[in-house]
Image 1 (cartoon, one colour):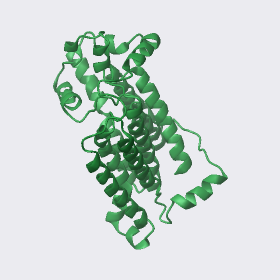
Image 2: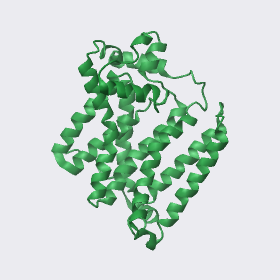
Image 3: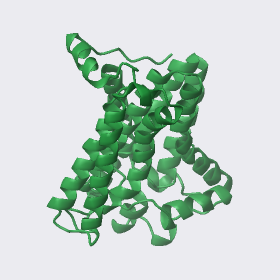
Image 4: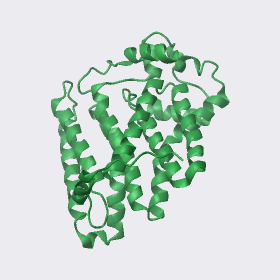
Length: 311
């Protein structure tokens, strides 16, 4: 079983009394949402390259801060806590917010650097020294069945949080629900806040810009799963500049650790196989460098440790 040590101390008891309502619902996930909205607004205000929609974005952020502030107030009202709809909102709204916030992060992605600037050249040199550029040679053969399989495994990422959260919620393990979802959303908050400071396009663009990959080979060909992924990654919501650190990898590590905690060695082993396939698919599909995945994995471990400590 994969376990991480519980970090705590005398400070934890006093801190918990601040963030926990007598219902045992933590307010910390809601504070995390508000904190990210403040950071997002700061980027908008201080941006070197200002968005044409900055006023609308700031007003939206202000409205969201007000809504989540009301949620904080509601967490202190015993009569509201007795309402099932409120408990669902309190538990799931921070998770839903950070899923949506990936799209919202696009407004600040190019706040400080031109749209065509990235740190890919530095990562490519590091990747070459450490791993001999696997994004170039892994998919060299482009076998359709393998491409489809690895794209399927890459897309398992979208199920990690719902699987854990729904299982824990349905079984009434709400403290664990909040610990899992806080670890996931803490990783998201860090990634979304870091992207504008160090934009990285990822191998599918970076290797082309470096002259190492022909543009015609930046998009892989395969079966239906590859085609669906191409729509998401090329015509859909995926941003150009959000590769480092990998939120996929951060969330995957949370999934791996908590699968082991919930379902024991068998669950941990199955999760390890799925996560390994996702990581391989991310590099094979040229969506991430190996370095991205390692940094994201480290972020996932830190997020679990922080959640264990605070929740």
